[in-house]
Length: 424
Image 1: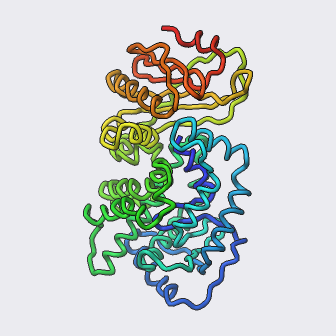
Image 2 (image 1 turned 45 degrees about the vertical axis):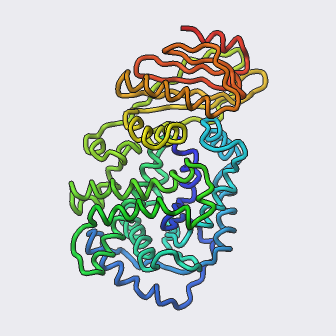
Image 3 (image 1 turned 90 degrees about the horizontal axis):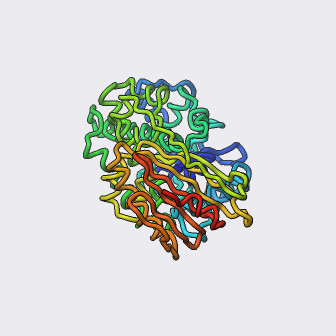
């Protein structure tokens, strides 16, 4: 489910704190004499010394305006995000209650990324671009972050790395965290070297990335007004990614700079809990409920629901503390959206697997709260320890607890279908 927004970001590989964009040569950037770019050689030498990744070739560079960026983003989304894909991503967000009914995925993406961008590295054209704006942080640091991407790209083909993730949504976000976490850590290490400190970033220094994320809203009003899920999807690659890379570096030293790309994490749980990455703890793929309908329709969208997704679902309904306590116990999740009933209305099928029956029961209780908060109308017709079923403003629903599994079917339009499913 992380792909609801992350998949759109992945198509243009754009992230917020340091404004990383994947673009095409049609940008038309210009490269006049610029004192900042005169520092590139020295920055690259320092980054190479820290990481052991040597520069294979110089990185072309230039600047563009914010107006050019907005035009590019609009054009890029039209080309890469097909109408059906945009509809499926947007609908998924709405059916899980992660964004309001009037949320516009395309407009939100363009507005947010135009507001955030300060620089980017073009994976395909192998070029580094700075925005012609008043920087919110020292441009040298931003430049070092993007040059860290360039160095990694020369050794590990980041375009292929971010695109080669099959259909696993949660893995997409995990790979984003690899890319941004490694570059953020290397930027911090570069900053320390400039200060004459030849040591890895301390925990206090690393926390600066997370603190920057926490205060981004006051600087960026579009970001501040975005739904929680959108905000955290953009922040996660930095705030969680830098901690993940630091854990790998502490365990593997310079080998970490290659290992995170050659042996990447499988899901956001491994990013949030690096010990699971080292232990090769794979995510599960629980089977969706067996759904028999009188008028089944075509599939609109499908994907995985990882720890990050469950964290936000819990956070927005029960608060951050409860989310951080329960979400780590999820082991996997799956969803799909179908057209169903005579009206061909969207229907959500969803299942999650937990590490114990007790945690599954706790989540089942929490999910009932989520459903009540998600809908204007939530009228339970049947409520037991293992079932919560009834009617909402989105149709009939049935949520069930069975062992370590919590499943839900939401959006049934036919009463007979609901009646057949809502049985013990």
